[in-house]
Length: 138
Picture 1: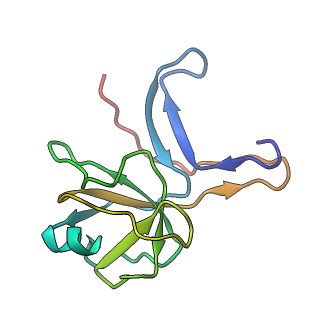
Picture 2: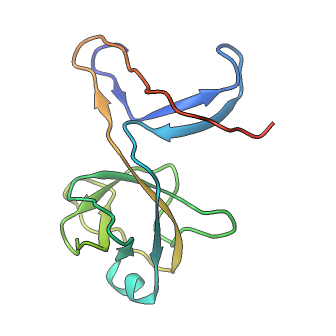
């Protein structure tokens, strides 16, 4: 990677050249965890995920589960910052900017949340992905 490059995600392709994008995952990511937003969460902009383990300034991305929709106000393919306001063992709020105000959630929904860690290269370097199993549909 060239100096001053920030790696946010890793994309998986069907071939090394002229391939088709098959999937992507956040860099330095942890396992996905289920979350939900109910009517009380809409009122307070709270996202519920039991024992989520997140702390203020963690970066997260949201995914809709099959057949469900994300709460209105949250988008897939968008990185958010966890904020300290409303942060408990089982609930958290997010902002589109570090240290910013909570995203306005206007409708209930659920899905998965995943923590990620962007990596900034101060000098030229190599981004290495640890091994993992991938199962992609034909």
